[in-house]
Length: 233
Ligand code: G3P
Image 1 (tube, rainbow, N blue to C red):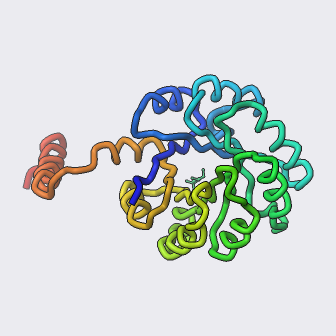
Image 2 (image 1 turned 135 degrees about the horizontal axis):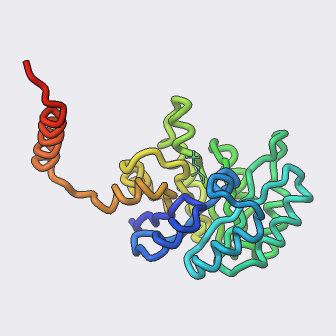
Image 3 (image 1 turned 45 degrees about the horizontal axis):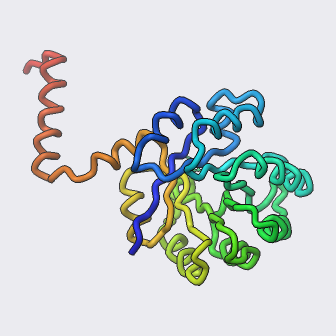
């Protein structure tokens, strides 16, 4: 089974600079909330700053209009900013309207897309029908947010990988990663990409400690804290 690629889920320019150098990182994903958190004032200027730092690895930049025609205009403009861009399109707008026709039009124009905010198998089936296999595209399934809502993302990712199996240019991305073990799960499911916050990428880089070592580290940690607090009975 091919390795699951690790993308870094961040919009902060300094972090992108640091993580762009790491071989473990194959690309980047952003979203409007991450852009806001990074302090972006002008979406265009900030995106172009990120593109100056990350020139080769794929980077997803999302449209932010709620109007489908406006989304299309934004997608066409964003796409002109660089060759390594995947234009991120939400599967629906906030009123629940499926963006399928827009996805089809952009896909026909050979624009690389990342279809985002996906939660169900039925959405994956509908999106898959809108994507031909000439242009690379990504379907981002928000596993962590599902788990936050008490739902198991594993069967959904598994089915999504099966649905898109015949199309080698359509990749399933495990989004909203919550813990390092999600990488192992994504790999087992044959998920092509996982997007991971920087802190969790560092933990994945340190995978491999033995149970013996983990026991020692755990006990040592408790001992150090007990001594620091000068606990006595
Ligand atoms: O970038 C998409 C996704 O990974 C966001 O994750 O942590 O906001 O649920 P989160």
